[in-house]
Length: 373
Image (cartoon, rainbow, N blue to C red; front, top):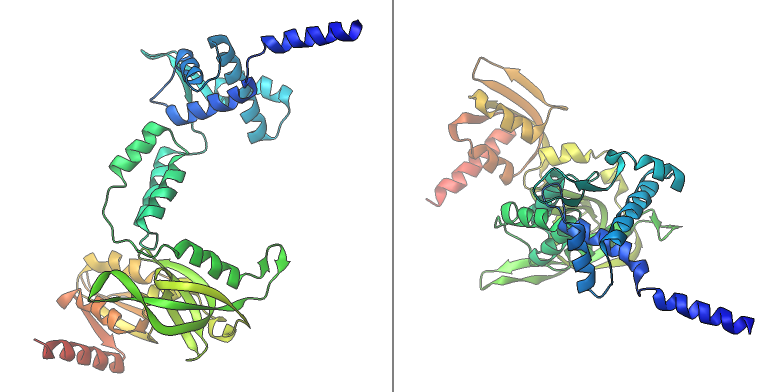
């Protein structure tokens, strides 16, 4: 008889319980994260209506309790403290994640962003969109992930105000996978075990004038030893050692296809032993390598000083003042046609002074251009 009585009591208790109540605090938090910020609040009635709409019974009193539990739990997790310490801490409104704001026409709750500033999230999303090596669809997906850290209203502002700029994007959908594979090939630890860096193989994509919508694969299959991945002017590049030509080379990652591991140890460590990647990027134009040379240039207007410093930096570069308008710059440069084109962009305001072989090459560069006009 006693066992039957206990079973009846348990059934009565269970009948009084509403289903899915354990999910409720989590769903309340997700609703608040999505719908609220310092400029957008929701009332307890709004939260109850949302829960009822998705099939969960709720009332205002239980919502207040859920929000109190959310504040305690998030404070405990963020600070690594006990429940008692959390209860004491959230007595201070500044320590709460979810705030009730009574000082507005519509009184309500909102999530106070403590880790993620709207401007910071906007900048991260804009960086995703400015990266030429990320295909448009993947850029949209990544920007949406970043925007999950702010409210729906703030995410809409980001998309409307910052992300509508049209940019040239790659059509290669395997870029992010390529980057992952290259990083694995260069790794010294892989899946928790020691790994010896190895070579990779790939095919390179190139546009054909008859089909600009879809670049085609070059017949040559490259096998190289990867050493660095770098970003320059919105493009992702691989710095690698070309085992056939026995020299350093750069490749656009978004033009690489069918990247695979090659079961051979990486070569060319000597070629990269003394490479300072930062200075290499400064002296290389459009990632076209050339013969590294110490070049002296003259600029005839001080307005170009900031541009020149942005290009070459300060370390290892000599800046000499001639007068209030003229200055000299001496820097290491990877001499290439791209470097000459950069100089040409300044017209009569820039001149290569030395060494003489570079001056001669520049004159030949100009003569070849004049020949076609």
